[in-house]
Amino acid sequence: MGDIVDKTCKQTPDYSLCLSLLRSDPRSSSADTVGLGLILVDKIKALGTETLGQINMAYKTKPMLKKPLDECNLRYKTIVDVDVHTAIIAIKGNPKFAEGAIVDAGVEASVCEGGFPKGQSPITGLAQKMNEICDVTRAIVRMLL
Image (tube, rainbow, N blue to C red; front, side, top):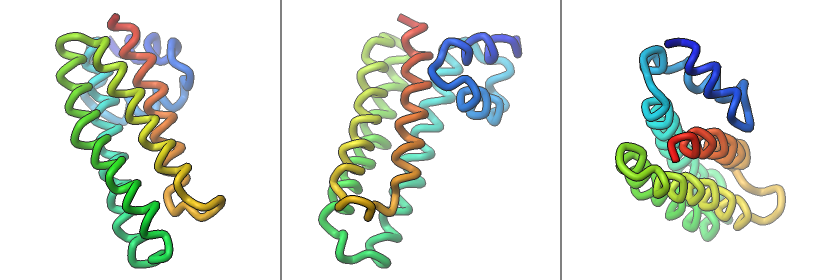
């Protein structure tokens, strides 16, 4: 069954990221494609939660960025509370809606990042990682369609 991770990751836009994300979760060794998608949605939720923590710390260290931080706080709460919830339900039921939720998570991260003055975002690395994970997750969700 371990071959399913390798085989599935080869069909994503970032083979090595996919492998590292899935192999770091013990559930992947016995998961089917639905299970692999759910693992990646958990990774999106974890990264969104981590990013919210970084945003909260940035309020203290970069008070001049309050407006874009407020916007990002709202967008990452949407990722964690809405997009992740929708994706989990949809992967188990109608995966087409999961794809939309995953795409939205990536869009939310990009819009957040674009709201900062050039070069001033305290979460650039996390936003890029969110987009990369969303791209891999979307590819796996598409395999369920």
